Length: 187
Ligand code: GAR
Image 1 (cartoon, rainbow, N blue to C red):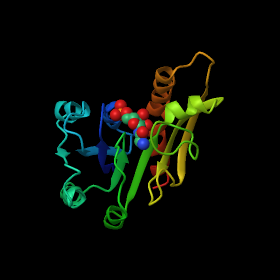
Image 2: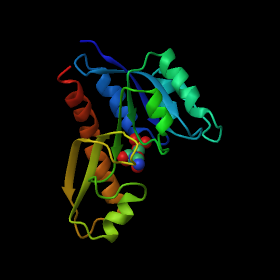
Image 3: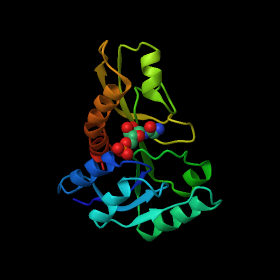
Image 4: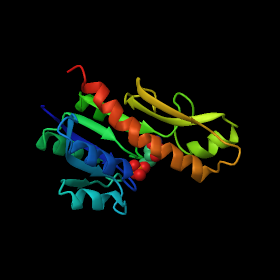
């Protein structure tokens, strides 16, 4: 199968990156991870790129043209698909104009509920009965693009923020690969 040259953007631990690296080793999984972009030099996920010999671009988002640098690298590595896996920076309109292929994001709530940050805290405060994660296409609206896959679980009375986070992330490791397979199934 022809696999898509993919770039994964991270800012933190990179557990979703790790999961996608493992999945991409499968002959039938439709992506190859050719580049990792990270905007946090202290991110644990950087190690994963290194261990797996995946080229890494570390960007400083305080620099005005950091997205142009990313675009340059995307071209260099012939990237045609981007996965945002815990990338805590909003993708600009200009970037979207320059990269006209698919970008998907994983978000730790049942979108359209709880867009943005601090989702687990807000889910608990709002006494939600269930929560989960969503994989969606990225457009110019924050966490507002078309939904590809959503997975949920029921919240127990005893659930804490940490428990909800752990349960959500477990679902993310199923939802993200599932969304990728779904996107490329018809290509
Ligand atoms: C994931 O739970 C993801 O849903 C969330 O960051 C975490 C990254 O974990 N993303 C967002 O909150 C985006 N707004 P990881 O670095 O271990 O994959």
